[in-house]
Image 1: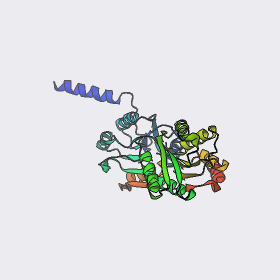
Image 2 (image 1 turned 30 degrees about the vertical axis):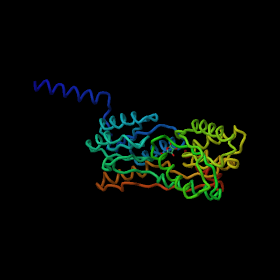
Image 3 (image 1 turned 90 degrees about the vertical axis):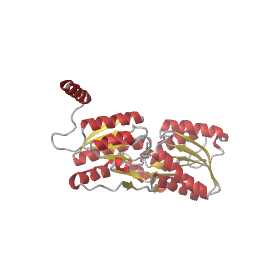
Amino acid sequence: MTWLKSAVAATAVVALFAGVAPAQAADGKLVVGFSQIGSESGWRAAETKTAKAEADKRGIDLKISDAQQKQENQIKAVRSFVAQGVDAIFIAPVVATGWDSVLKEAKEAKIPVVLLDRQIDTKDNSLYMTAVTSDTVHEGRVAGEWLAKKTSGKCAVVELQGTVGSSPAINRKKGFDEIVAKNPGMKIVRTQSGDFTRAKGKEVMESFIKAENGGKGICAVYAHNDDMAVGAIQAIKEAGLKPGSDILVVSIDGVPDIFKAMAEGTANATVELTPNMAGPAYDALIAYKKTGTLPAKWIQTESALFTPETAKAEYERRKDAY
Ligand code: AHR
């Protein structure tokens, strides 16, 4: 019976690793598996591009798995990285909940996990080494404060939310809502998810315009990312109104297209989110591997506000980097 058990176990091991190339680079390079959400926005594509460039700079072997917006694909990718025995796993978590069990598997395999650009909901923070993200509540506040100042605190706002259940959608709403609560003349008259995409941003904005007297009742659109704002700008134009003046446009990310729109006068403000999340994550990982020192639990990136005055120069500076 014992040999039978070993044979079954051996078959199981072979089956588990069948078709899985060993992750350890023969040249001693660090191997990082990155479960990326997909390519829903210009910002996301830039993050992937930057992750590759920053890996090359440091001689890291980066394996990227595209989850096509599905958490189940991300969970599969993490399991595959664990099976391959990579040195670290980076995850940009599409939604905030539902990560504990797969992260426990990575922890049991002693593979450090780094969260990129989005946070997760967990009671056990030991399940990941660090998170490289912006303060997404603060981003919402910065956008809200800009709008409150611009409109002297009087504005009927429509809100395009990001992916339902994602940490930036939850937090960017929270931060903006705080500012609305402080300004009795500000009101969110419509709010709906545009899933962080340009196409859905346009579609939802069209429905807001229809519902709000052809757009005449709308003072501003607050979009949780620039891509949805660009979609909304198109919808406003098609409704015969002027984005940037008839309806103000404020959003988050700082991608080249929003700077182009600001330079053309069709958008008004954006809060920058750097696409270089992987660079600080690699540095933290390298330091950890060398010295055993754990990085801070949260490596926070900056969130600066940009307005049309610098838009042309910012567009020129960024257009090739994205
Ligand atoms: O998590 C970051 C957000 O995800 C970006 O603001 C957005 O463009 C992306 O899809």
